[in-house]
Amino acid sequence: MSELTIADTRQQVFLLNLIELAATIFRGPDSSAWSGIIATGLPQLLQQAPQDAPHLSEALEKLQSALPNPHESGDPLTLLETEYVRLFIASRGGVIAPPYESCHMAEAPRIMGDAALSMRSRLGKCGLEIALDSNEPPDHLAIELEYLYHLLATAWTDNNPAQETKARAFARLEMLPWVRRFRQALVKGEPHSAYLASADLAVAALEAVA
Image 1 (cartoon, rainbow, N blue to C red):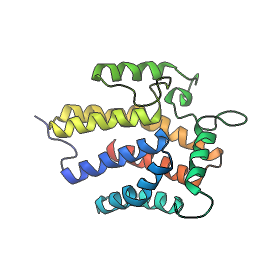
Image 2: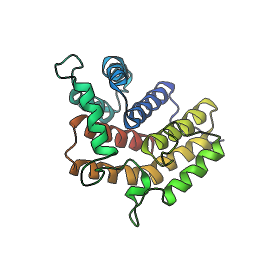
Image 3: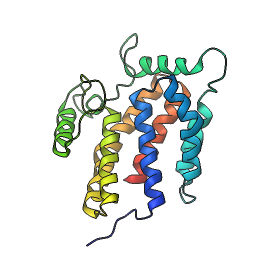
Image 4: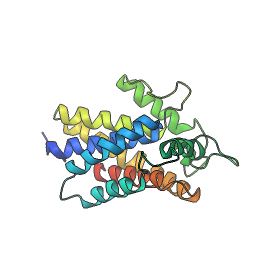
């Protein structure tokens, strides 16, 4: 039997936590969840970061420096919630960066396209349910990240190289191309630096897995 590509347990846990953080952010955290990310989530991840992966530490540090102090005046965490709506849900002139794979296809981008149908099939085969509002298309970035988390966690828990290969192929072939295009769309909308840093973090995590 072939060996796992990523066999170090600490590295596995770190990558899973990194993917989980990106999924949480693009799921749309409220002020309380943002407070947890700032107070404990990011500091703990930075402590876990492998020394041989400086690009991942840099991505986390970039996000940490972009996030506001929750104790600043003016309720800065609520501003992050408002910015999430502007960037990903509703904005004058159209949504700036729809968080759906179908909207970032090279040809015929649209909501609930072929990518959404393929993602629905993958989730069904794994017996997974969508962890967002019931009307969300299944190719939402947070859902795809959670699916990748599931594939990797299963592979590493079961010491299953074939499952790991499947997860890495999903990250490389399915997610990375469109998430990079999603990031480019985000840049054009002049986002809050925290969301650009979050997109950079998602890309870095996918590159590390792929």
